[in-house]
Length: 347
Image 1: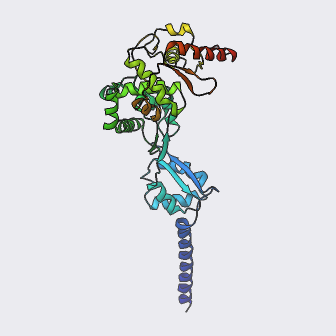
Image 2 (image 1 turned 90 degrees about the vertical axis):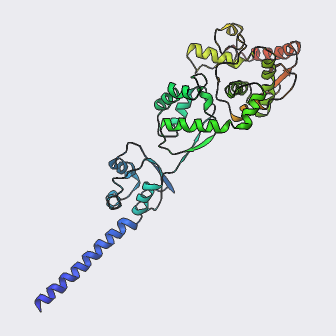
Image 3 (image 1 turned 180 degrees about the horizontal axis):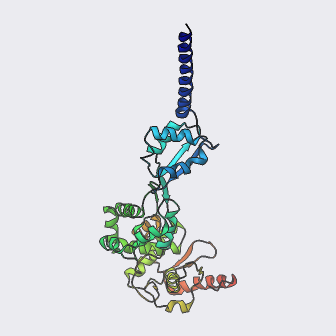
């Protein structure tokens, strides 16, 4: 009888222990283990991450790291870490957390425009994906890639069509660059290539011309008209005489692209540079800015008119006054010069 009681007692203790273990196991797997108040929390897992790196990354966002580790080990996640950007949701249990980190890498929306140089673009992209600016710039300037794809350093910026794209956060520099080449080829479809051919420009020349148009006017509705002026000059064998190209030439010559130049002086027009369109008839060797798609379309579909000149309209800021001949232009220009002198703008 005594032995029987002992057996019963041991059995009861075993059941209780098993129940406690089962309860702990259930809680470890299915009870909420997040430690943040927001609806979502972003966690970045670098490409070089180890399992220990993951634990350090999620430590601030989970209540019980030990229970997470238990589930992660059981689900073999520790040996199968995947880099990326992950959204953890409030109230997730360990099972859901591990599943999210195994397969929930969510893409990021990469947006860029208004970049002056490849250096600026590299900095902008590095803010949005894992690749750093140095790796991106090295990739952008890779001579083998440029040569194989018929680009030069001077035209390379034109390969990056500004828009909104989806990438995984852990995209490498070379992967980003290759995707952008695909997007460039997709942008220059048969219809756009035919339009470029019809106006006598190559796609690269269109982008360079578009960069000038965009620097001349921020008004999207005015860009086809401004493009028409430059195309009139180009088709008639004139120099483009574009102030923005001179400003770019000054910056390139001095190496100081942070300089703000609001006024082009007569002495600047003599600067020796292939970007100085007051000195050379040719379209500059590459874009002086990253043109928006609207500027590229403005060149491809430029407004046909008889205007050859334009100057800022001081009575309608942001827009310009257009002229068909030099006499009319000079009158418009005098009004602008009086205004700019009154503002005290000397450079």
